[in-house]
Image (cartoon, rainbow, N blue to C red; front, side, top):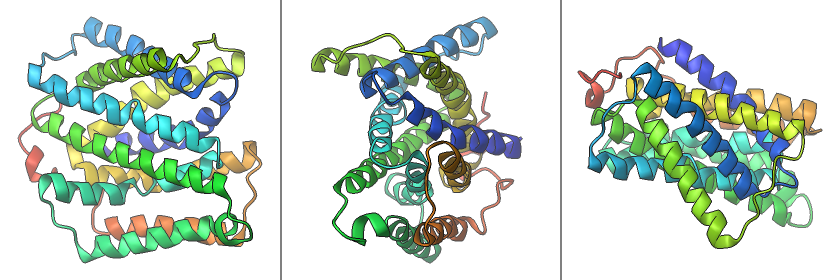
Length: 304
């Protein structure tokens, strides 16, 4: 079961970066993300209600589900979408692959898990990889401010994603199933985005063409409803650290799609950087198999 969830997460999320790039254009980023998660919530809620899988929750759970909505279904994607307007979507996915390292640090801060020398080495290798990937943009002549903005936004989005992992871990430990947490979280995320749209006066134009509609449908159904559910089920079953190992494989798929559809040109420094970034993740998880037992925090708590 864990391997099936892992494979589904990698294949779906590895391809969503290109779909995000296809949404960029006449529709404001804020509106595109709102459409995505509003549609995802509208798809998920009836399914859960009809199947009887919408679990009861307590008032305090909604504080955490609201936080999950902010971190996983709004703020992080505001960063990712804007980052994709500055750098190729495949490179955004490479930065996102550092989520495993962010998770290791945040698990220490929020759950007291020890940070090993292996994690420190993995961080150093991963950062070296990012420097190599963007060496040409940052040091190959005049400083590329656009690339710098893209890097910063992608890093900030990854931080929000990692914080959302910590919230999801807390919800699972308290007995809230991932599907229920996702339904509420997407609803809260969409409501937050709608409030931002209203406050900022952002327009809500209709989807302009079939390409946009296709990308929106894919991101809402596969990237959001299915992808987040499989990932957060992994978080509940094997822990946030090992679940984030899926991000090691995202760049392989995302960069191939970016090369094929966005005209991304490989350079030796970028190729070496991707290898280093992936190596950093492999170092971190060399002794953490996907089939491993549940962490102590989740033993005895069934994922419903």
